Image 1 (tube, rainbow, N blue to C red):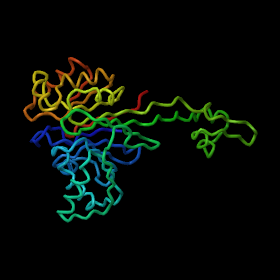
Image 2: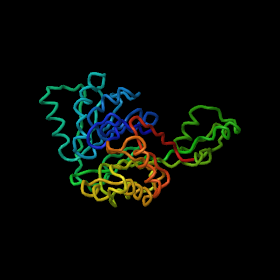
Image 3: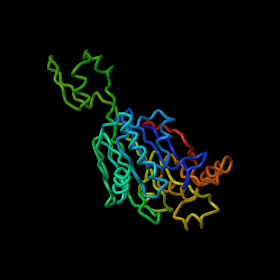
Image 4: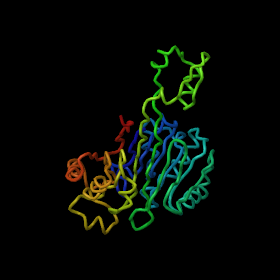
Length: 309
């Protein structure tokens, strides 16, 4: 599991920062990529990474402001040209289906794959299977803006191969059955109980990615005990009034969310173009005054998310 930031700017694309887009790479887990937001130029950013558009399985749109959706028509079209024929799911606020269907119809773009639209009608579980669950909550941004909590299922403990081999059990079907939690009776009549040959389960990871928002209780709830919290940081601490006026957050407010949620790592994104070089690093230092484990994202910044030991 890995996060890769394709665009980290606020509002307009800039030389240093493209418009918002984040890839959650689940290549080992399900050979897929989930995209969160798709600002203008996202497909160009993807060309500078190892991401393959055909691997994009789901796209989650936080809200319908242009800097978060204007890259969708181009990316969806390119996915066809680049051999993508697997179905795609797009989650987002009401209106996302109309936006995409209208642009594709007017441009006479025909896709080689079906799109399933899931427009968010209420807070709660958006998606769930045996591997992952995605929960959404409404944030505070003037228009409908959502945050997403991605919860991975716990990993079963490793099979204790040496212990089995010491009993004379060779690799084969028995190993698979024990790994699946079954009880196995050997030819000599000895019964092997699965739990006796499996290590401790490992806690699944939690990744929280928020849309644009003021400081909110919903943000804290979504980020509770998260391994990684991605939070907008459009303004520095001294511009709290401006942040509130434009329904955005400051460095300090993002850090407060991380602190109150007991998150492990805070990543700041959605950075105003006014903050360049040392000014951008100052945002990170401001946040560290409230929450120590902070990174400020830049385009193509990549963060692996290992399992807890």
